[in-house]
Image (cartoon, rainbow, N blue to C red; front, side):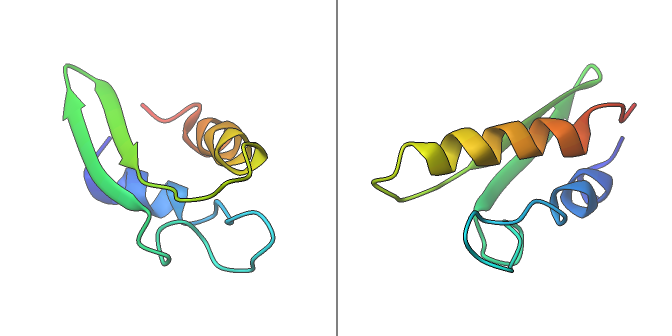
Length: 67
């Protein structure tokens, strides 16, 4: 598991309502890997509480199974 692999996996996560992904939108602010555990910092500005919930769910789906 590398930062590039994580970034590539997240590039399939679309911002709800748009055709662009969260990586190309610049929403992924940080990626760190410590002892096999990845932490991803994503910055989202919206008033719709469903947007971050959907992105969170989609990110987990994209990253599940990576080792």
